[in-house]
Length: 252
Picture 1: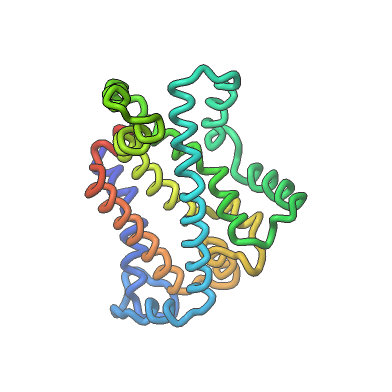
Picture 2: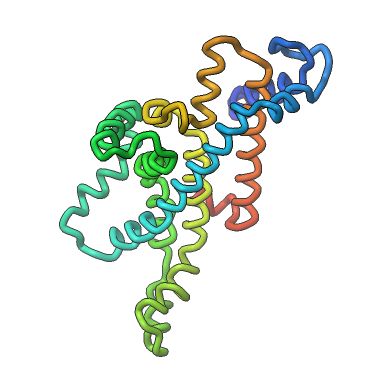
């Protein structure tokens, strides 16, 4: 049963990869001939390349915002008896409790009142707000495993609070930070619903561009774009394995 389930999950990915190398003007499986023409068409498309560049910026901005906030929140929730600790812990369940379309509409209203719409950085900020619980979860796993005696030893040797944090705490939390950063980046790169609601013509990201394209017709270029996402996901897993280890990633 496990083997059948794995095959069932992998089959769509395999089909997308295979169809992206077809030569026909329509998506066919299996393809009659193999070709790289749709990858070339993807490189020649200014709309897709611009949207992909914007998605990279949005994902990077989202990750950059999530790292310091996620680290501070994870440490604070673990070490201090905060007055609104239960509320903050409830916030971490928001991705599972509130539909993304609701979050998108709320952020649209708030950003509209603040005059933050039509800016690419505001899209990245919105995705950081939505996805930051995943960063907090990831860092919290490292905070829970942190041996406080390491920090006590550093302070006893004359290190100040900031020095202890930079040279002892942060390196000890680095596995969780790396895992959270990769996860937040991939979520920001792939986010569709919130991006669809708050983006405009000048800030449209790649998932929204794909959605706009398939409303008219489904071109094999879509398969090529999907394959690029698959390659990026595989690369992220390889980087995670090299820097942290997949076993520790799965445990977190």
